[in-house]
Image (cartoon, rainbow, N blue to C red; front, top):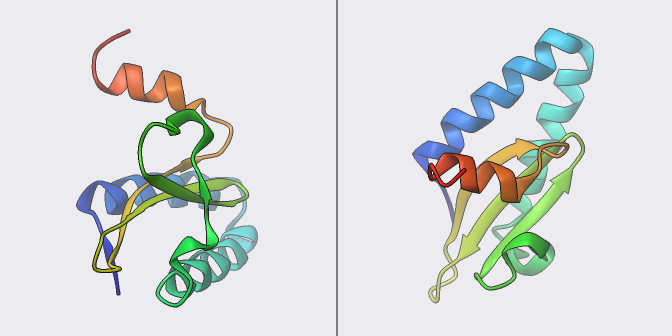
Length: 102
């Protein structure tokens, strides 16, 4: 089972809007691949890699150009989709800015 977090849904909408603005045709393909991979997490939750910038946390990610999808697996095998961002954004800087630390 996977559960999208409300922050994920807001971030995904912003990413989709930016992709559609660049290329509506490209968006259709990315959208299908994106949700195929999220649904695949139900059967293969460990298929994503550990997040290099957050190695001290138990978060995982799937990189689907141009997106990075962050998620966490609970002890009872529920996959929580936490966030999505454009892959060219620097995660460390984003986290610091989001917390008002820089």
